[in-house]
Amino acid sequence: MNELIPLMVIVPLMAALLISAFSKFNRSTKIFAFVVALCLPLIPILSNYGLHYFGGYEPMLDNVTGVMFHPAITYSFTFLQQVFIGAVGLLTFLVIFIYLTKYKEVSGPYLFLLFLGTAAVTAMILTDDIFHMFVFFEILALAQVGIVAASSIDYSYEMALKYMILGSIGSPMMLLGIGFLLALTGSVNITDIATAVHMGLIDATSPVFLLSLALIFFGWLYASGLPPFHTIKSGIYSKAEPHGAALLQSFTVMAMISIVLVMFRIYSTLPIFEVLIVFFSILAMILGVSLALTQTDFRRMIGFLAVGELGFIGLGIGLGTNFSLTAGLFQALNEILITALLFIGFGAIVNATNEVDTRKLGGLLAYHPKVSIMLLIGGLAMAGVPPLNGFQSKLMLVQASLSCGYPELSILAIMVSIATFVVFVKTYYTIFLKPKPNDLELENRDVPRSMVLVMGILLIIIVILGIFPDMVTNGISSFIGGIL
Amino acid sequence: MKLYDQIFGVVKQFKKLFSPGPVTNADVSGSITAEIFLIVSMVLAVILLRHISPLLAGLVTLILAIVLISNIPLIPKFKIEQEDSLEKMLFYAIVVLALIVTFIYWGGILV
Image (cartoon, rainbow over all chains, first blue to last red; front, top):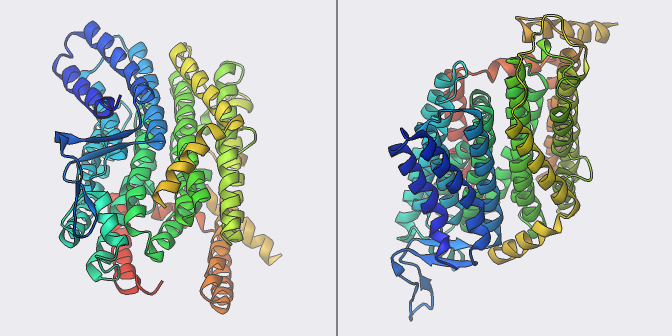
């Protein structure tokens, strides 16, 4: 059913608009939001792989050059899109489930932002049109700002505003880069641009082409929260509601892989492209984990760890082989699941204690054993402990960098994993294992059951992917084979 | 004893990192780990320059190691530069944009 391909974007987009318009009907809004959220992971499962041409304008063959041109905005749906849209759809459903069960009165604008963000990242990974991708990238940035500003945490407005101001540098640069590409090729279709580059119709060494790479690359750094945007990215995670932060980090990962795959298709002929990706990935890994080690606010600590993990994804993509790209994309999927689990789990601790400073916490293992055990397994998965999914993807990355002739990168990846383990053990000890401080007053609140249930679901997926990674990696590898 | 005093001085400087509030054993050990991790990982990353020139890699590694070790503690300095100040974030964003454009525009065809 290829008709379902555009519905993956249209359904959350329409739901966002309708919920925003009719949010005063609380009960109806809740039921509607739940039903739509349930549909989000189901649509990609039911849809067939294929292409969708908006307006029905099919590709045209140029009889002189023998090249196909794509006049329509095209959505391409393959196994890769299915996995990632399915994962984000599931996460959106789980997050909305937590939100609906947590509050009696729901906020229409907040649900609007959650659905809008999901629609934006779905469109970004589906589209074969670079300008279309940019439009949804902007929509995503606004949705992210809104989700942070809507939280009840102190200084969330300030952090959201800072993110928006930094976006006012990152986004126009990216648009300018896209403009240069349009000027060179006369097209915004990614397949057409990539064909023109690979057939030698464009001089890959021309300053305009190189400048377009520089500008789009800078926009990508902003979208993915790699340095110099790692501080603000970890900041917005820490100032969003825990379930919102879980979704925000999945948006970041989706935006990161969507844009980098587009760049890879266009600029892979330039060796400097891969050098740059590896450089910024290494920087993200080092800075993310170093700063996570010194945090006392555990939400900020997870934020920095999430940024450090993005470096692993970039490393896989920067190495540029089929195996490394597969490893990088598998790591991206794992990060979406693991970081969501950690944000929700630590959010449950905030809910129970109303405290985020690790120095003021302790002894919570006795009070919240289920949450603590699930968080422990989630943390081990992030650190790359077997047999969890983080181990599989990180092992693949280490093998990939060794086979590419970069043992330094393998050692670095292992060191970052060990440091991640240290961060997690330190935080786990201070929150759960050390004696409870006398002045810590536990709020007489249990952790919401919905949060525990969601953590359980994510944990099951993490374990399954750890034991059977081939379920995902084989399909991703075939997809990569198609674009290399 | 000089190295011991230097390390002890570093630990004392970590106090500033965590103020206001108490400094726990876990915080200090985390900061020392971060310090060592930062130095080792940066030196390790610089070894990648051997793909351009082994001599360059050796020289830069040696110089970087000396500079980093003689400037410990690095983490408080790093943390100050990476706080939530908008001015600093904007400064680094613009510096990186300038570096990327310069590097790719004039050096893109060389790599």
